[in-house]
Length: 285
Image (cartoon, rainbow, N blue to C red; front, side, top):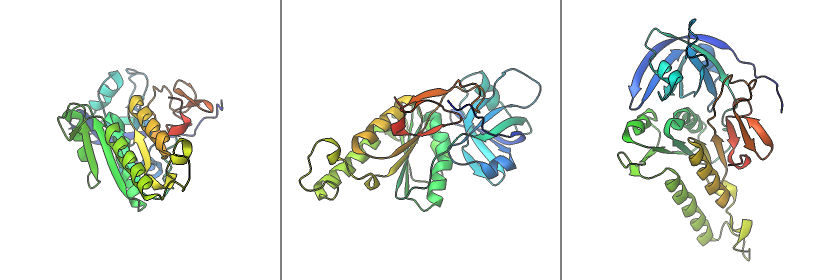
């Protein structure tokens, strides 16, 4: 495994906004250099600035949005580190390392389908806006457990968003993988019935019955592992292309500790430095 470290800069950033968004908290801070360099899908290692060593390690958080020289992150307060960050107020200062990792490859063409689950939806707002800015037709499917989390969909303002909750308290009831399956199956059936995607005389089983990849939207996904695995399986079944951003426990964020490795078809890869975005087909789920 390549142990080369990724250059990263440490920034001392003043918080200028901190407000609840349902079960989450939106924190905005001034970080001109980060704002200029960050790409959709990249992340930051964030902790409170100062001498305190409690908690010791920063937390990896995806870049939710860039607004001029402001960087916005969405925090789910579930543990010691994230609860500390969610408690930051205007005027407090953050220690921010980044931007880090490899983001989404946005160079493709055609429609894009953005699929997010829970707090994993946070970095996809930045991604969806960047895709739309490139002239791509963007559709967002966002899944949450409850209404309290689903309120975060309001942060995808001016983007076409469909919301799904497991308890049915907001949007359509169900897992976000369900509408994705419906969309991909409908495209398969459309191409099948039109005869455009399946060569005449081709075997109806095996790879020959898959539509050409450019007939499906390119999928950009971030969320729980189970959701990402479902996305990967659905895309594999029909031949669609997907990029997934994986979540992993990280200590350093720059590839040194190797504590965030995931298993891929090419062996173990560090989520922080070789990811967090990978082709869905490359990961061994």
